[in-house]
Image 1 (tube, rainbow, N blue to C red):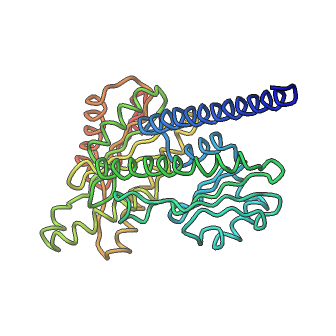
Image 2: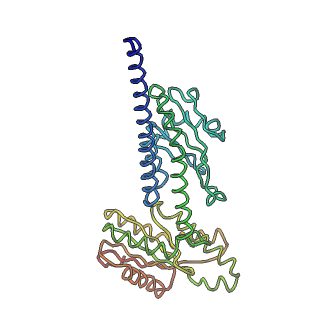
Image 3: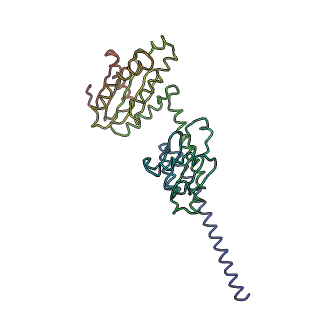
Length: 340
């Protein structure tokens, strides 16, 4: 072998070695991606606190996109400022971005951004529900986009799909397990879990019990269908008059409960709100059903340490006092035990 042939041979060997090394790096990256994806799926599966908003942030961190938008039911889940020009630009192109049934990549729709659009397949458990993510759109600055980034974004989409279905399926299962099927208020099982969580937080909170005065007469005089309609309406009314973070429960029959954390400095305003509930319920039901119905309410505002049984007994006793005081009344105890 002469020198020229030897040089060619050496170059060939080096080229082959580089090719093998690059293939090895590629396979290592794939393996790492697989392991990371597995860990990510496991984390989302077991952490029930991860909702779509949290998941959206996770997806941004994993894919390296600048912004991500999930088109969920009648909502848009995103990290973007919804007052920004960029968000308004994306929304103005929503029909185009969510029209296809295959992945689409475009650099022409959103100025200065590469948009990666992906239709999300829905699991069988969610197929009959309207509450699913139809599309996800990820935005990358065009100056940072290259083939490697795009290839990874494409490969990660199946992981996105799995994660989204895990979160939504879990939410559906929790809804079925923890929700009263008729009124859509949370049920007794959820009440126990919620109360345990609140007691462990060591933050000021309130618990209200209320029931409908003379509700048995509604069923006897108007039939159980009318009674069911009023129970459904009572649940809807409760959700409308309390804050979004407060939780409404149907404990059984016509007995409902509401819980929520409070700012200790705003107790007086909270009490004033509680005092308006009787009048609000009576006028709303009269307008909706043409019937004169009232509620009796017992409630506790506290920072003290209780267990679940003690809480239930204290608030139930307060509700009983309202019944004894003539119904259509309110009995509230502060954390200091004062009646107000």
